[in-house]
Picture (cartoon, one colour):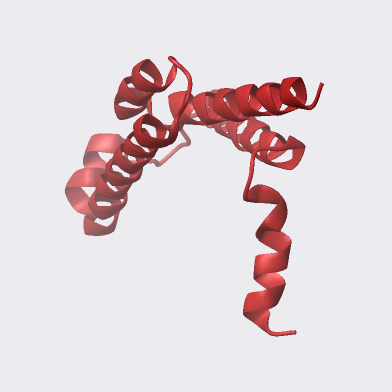
Length: 120
């Protein structure tokens, strides 16, 4: 079995809406919130403006965050099925993953509910 096959097999449980993907969204959101709440400024830290002024790497990463949030918003609008997709996509452009992760989890949760209802 090649490395690609191993990675593909490990990722299989995340390809479609399911409990594993919901746990992933929840874990990522929890880490995001914990980092925001507990990640206070440390002594000697430059701060956001000074860091962006002094570090080209920090500027590139800041722009990358905006690009990824925009791609997430586009993905949500194009692939989402619930009415939440458009407001959540707009919110994603302003607050990033704080809006995107719950919206993706909600989309998956609704898909799971529909799947269960169709089985009955």
